[in-house]
Amino acid sequence: MKRLLTPIAICVSSVLLTACGTATVKNESAAVSADSVVVHYADIAEAVYGDSLTTALDLRTSIDAFLAEPTEANLEAAKTAWIASRVPYQQSEVYRFGNAIVDDWEGKVNAWPLDEGLIDYVSVDSYGTQSDINPLYSANVIASKSLMIGGKKVDATNITPELLSESLQEADGIEANVASGYHAIEFLLWGQDLYGTNPGAGERPASDYDLNNCTNGNCDRRRAYLSAATDLLISDLEEMANNWKQGGAARVALLEQSPEQGLSTILTGMGSLAYGELAGERTKLGLMLHDPEEEHDCFADNTHWSHYYDVKGIKNVYLGEYQRVDGSWVKGASLSSLVSKDNMQLDAEMKTKLNSTEMAAQAMVDAAAQGQTFDVLIAMNNTQGNQLVQTFVDTLVDETRVTEDVIHHLNLQNIALEGSDSLDNPSAVFE
Image 1: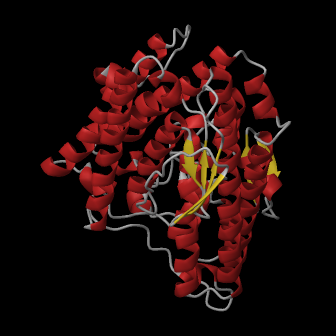
Image 2: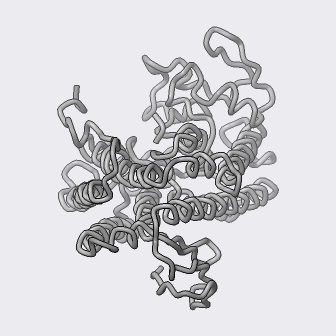
């Protein structure tokens, strides 16, 4: 399954210096049109995927430094770089559901949950040794120079980006066989989180990568896997960043549609990420099951930030603004401006709901700073924590209802937002 600052005033001038950096602001003296909103939506996509690539390159630099000198301090620096790389990427997820080219690609970089035993050693006590539905559940590529996949022998002597992408990713057609992307790298940096719904994240030692003081065996192959997965993430992000540049496939596909279809694309992404994916699959499902395996960034316990920046991404495309990792702003024609031209009340309501959702996400971030990360919040009998998570779900659902009002106001047709059994048919979750 493929799994989802303070604003400054817009002015007529093209560049405005602020305390936060440089704001690139389009001239909005002309009337906002559906066409201009769609074009600017593509401009934000170009910026956010560009930033995702930039931070992935920073991640590779940190990982290279760690592999050159595998100390605990350098491992922590690589972890910090991984968390930083999630900030722009999560803000891109609002582009997934409305744009087929993004949705078809997304599984390469952000697929979850994953059966981590495919990649490396795991705790048998918590993980087990086999699965009824996944023959590669505990294949441990790092310890295995050959594998049987679909009845064929696969040579895994050399761990390369091609091996990960062509032979291992979703091997045997099983979506839990996630061999690449952010979460594979996350597992390689943190290791398993063995704390369940108690405080604590993965605790992989730096010596797992130390050729002179190797722990848990196969340090040379583990190093090769981490390098290959990082290089593959960068090449995949390069592909999508280029897709949103002038003449790129994603931008062309979007702008070949009518302006009304373009607006439908934007709102499909907003509503589907907010409702079916984020409120449902990534949040409510884990809360219902009290299961940390349903946590998005489960090895690093970084889920609170991933959810926060998903919410920020939705808000970005409605307001037509995005703050880049260098502190500069991209601003221009927005859905907000388009809606407010003849329905200021609806626009105000939409912004209120977006702010409420952001506040609910911030509450989870604040809880995590006090040791109550997402997996702790969803624990059985954690009444206050459960309510904090439920409030986040509720604000996303409320936000989606107003998104539907915006869709109706703009008279857009044939929009189907993603749903989730956890919200629409809860009894099915337990069947």
